[in-house]
Amino acid sequence: MGHCVFMVRPDSIYDDSPSEQYQFPKQYLERANTAVGDWIVYLEPKKVRETRGYHALARVDRIIPDPTAPGRFLALIEQGSYLDFPNPVPFNDGDGPVERGLVNEQGKLSGRAQAAVRPISPTDFLRILDRGLDQTDQVLPRQDTDKPTEGLAEQQSPFMPETERQRVEHLVSRPLRDRAFRRVVLRAYGERCAFTGLKFINGGGRAEVNAAHIKPVENNGPDIVHNGIALSGTAHWMFDRGLISLSNDLEILISRQVNDIASVESFINKNGRATPPVRSTDRPHPHFLEWHREHCFKS
Image (cartoon, rainbow, N blue to C red; front, side, top):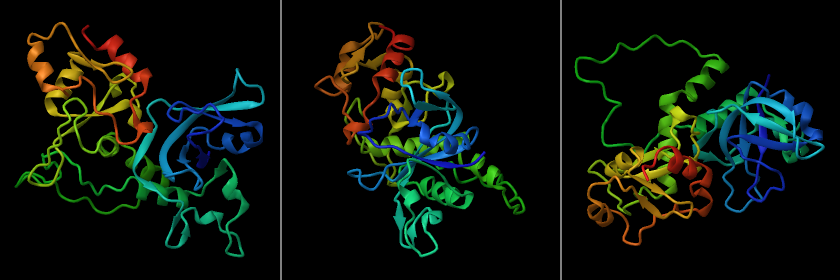
């Protein structure tokens, strides 16, 4: 097993759905096979407009021939492993490429930088993860959960060096995934509730809005921006209980089981539509919206 970089772009000719599958030609099969059972990072190349650079990670479950495209293969992504970086990592930093392994003996960028699938060293991989999942957080909820209750602070454990595997598993633990997902979704919506249009910042400079999964984690919903929506506390409560939902074109749907529809209509956006994310490419995916309407919404 080993880490790899998978290159993706919005206008790709390949059938990619990064949280589910990555399609590639046969020439990359040997390299991609080394990543089976291990973590990869996704990279948008520098030529992509407003490139996100290294912007996500996922774990490859298995690789199969694409049954619909002869000569192409699918790297199937382990369910629930995909995670967008709250801090996209640029290809270059002040010392050159973040993938130091791409620099050849002459100090020049190797031709391997053009490869859509390529191995990456554990050191370079962890450097990208550390930067992409940095925990400096400006959009935390108002509860200061990082401060222990006085008198109940845990005794600090002695320092023990982590192995590479332990480091990766720590970085993608559920609590840290939740924090990363929150930051990605709130940034996508400008820290504004999609249903009410309201943007409240508390006295500590933190956003009073939640990052809701459209398809919940317990139902195998991925931690991807297209499965997220920024909601105020009341809207989040109603959304999770199926009292409100969204059509594929972001029309707000109100359940007939709501006992005071007029109050809900005065609470949501006046045009009856959810405020879309800042970037159109971050809009909720119809697949997840359809799941919410079918399995959660009380029509």
